[in-house]
Length: 160
Image (cartoon, rainbow, N blue to C red):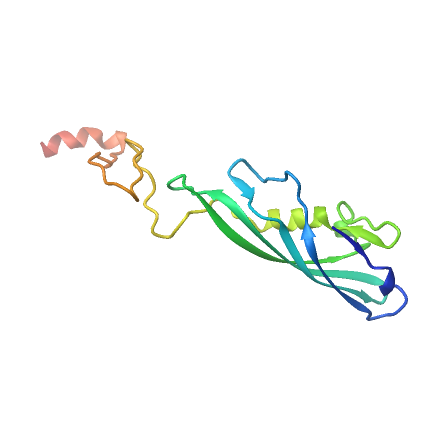
């Protein structure tokens, strides 16, 4: 998505509303995190004494794999992005050209830094049986899951 901010350059404190869809193409974070819908952005661009501030709300749905039961589920994400053009911090992915800037890379970066490393489908998810692999949300199994520290295995003989 390209933002044309030329109309803001003449006046300090000038502001314009921005909304649209950012096409991420085939961008997926990993095999188990896939964006399920287009990324929607809305917010404003403002001129603060020659510095152009981009303040956007980013919303997207994505598909994940549960870390406990391996079920695929969808989750929504809402992120606020604030970037200043010509700032040292964002020179790598916000490069203005002829009073226009492509925000696609900044949106990707903000989505990435707001993801967790593991997700579960629900707080009540029981996961998979570590012995037989059965989904404990759907069925119960009779596997013995009590693990004994191998260093204390000898003491088990005293209980017999």
